[in-house]
Image (cartoon, rainbow, N blue to C red):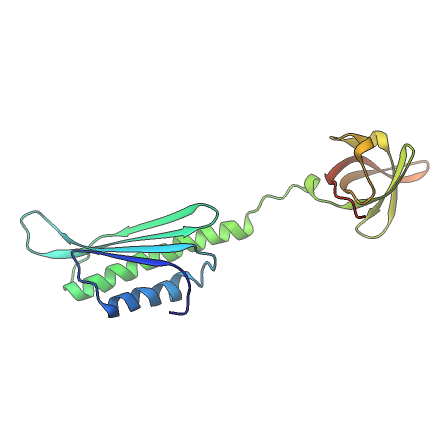
Length: 191
């Protein structure tokens, strides 16, 4: 048991065994953890079920629940398959883990790749100097762009301080390139 991931195994109508507990632990570690390394908890319920009220044949239902931050819960339920009881339990268990792995991979991919990014909310310059009604922004490329405090939008121009992260657009006039539509993104000061 190399993972410190909390795993809860519940048996209903099925006798718990060390070998089955170890198998479930290995399945969590080999199938789920490699897909998503930030799982909070995994709960597995293994239940013996009667297929029909008057039928003496039984099967197994496996319910697998995985909790992933911030507040996602993946729940997979698999019901009895045909076959002998031992094969049926392992088959149902494997099927539940395959389904959980697919859903966990989909969630993990969404969490990694589909983070909305708004260019107007990204810092692309730092205010380096303010003098009267004029200021200077240092771009990511190390260039200096002048701006007028009237170009500041969305916040009080007088609250702008050296070290503030800003986004801006540029325009060229008779004096050269200037920053316009200056928006404060990060108001932290560098000193």
